Length: 99
Length: 138
Image 1 (cartoon, chains in turn yellow, red):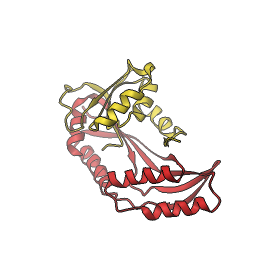
Image 2 (tube, each protein chain N blue to C red):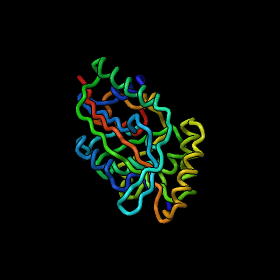
Image 3 (cartoon, rainbow over the protein chains, first blue to last red):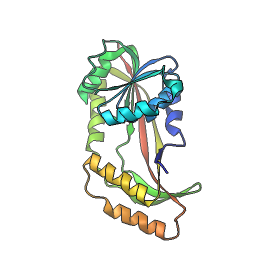
Image 4 (cartoon, rainbow over the protein chains, first blue to last red):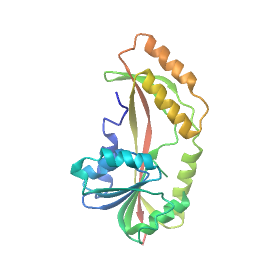
């Protein structure tokens, strides 16, 4: 049986009222294998998700449901190197277990 | 951490939101879940230095006027690991990534608990998570 993190979805219930997710441009830092990214996409966000771990990004890309393909983009990257994006690019920045 | 917060501040639009979601500075608890009942076996021994440093970095960013606090929430998160071998594999990986001393004693405790007639139970690791929502100033 694979490890299941938060099958009760308490994390999603806490995040839902925390921000206006629908249509928001979100940068997720430290996305790992994309577990939280998929939840943010489910909330309607447009997500760019980064992580320094290439292997984790590969898994994240592989496990992304097709229905979220237009909402989510994964990239290898770190919080210290956000110079790819100009100032003011995002409505929401999420540190996902990564600060 | 402070540099990461500075970068996050830069790429946020004016009045954008920063969401900081991470485990609280508290040791994870390992137990057995049977049906709706969870029973504690033992508490892990983690190094919480980075958690406290991250809290300090957030306070510094707020103190420097980059953000203001908007919301705080704390809730319990469960990781359903499975049986003993899955728990051992998860723990070994966790200890390696976190640079912790061996937690073999914990595997022994879980094995003993499962052997005491709890073979149909699932190993569940739980701990508090903190959610901070900060709003960019200016």
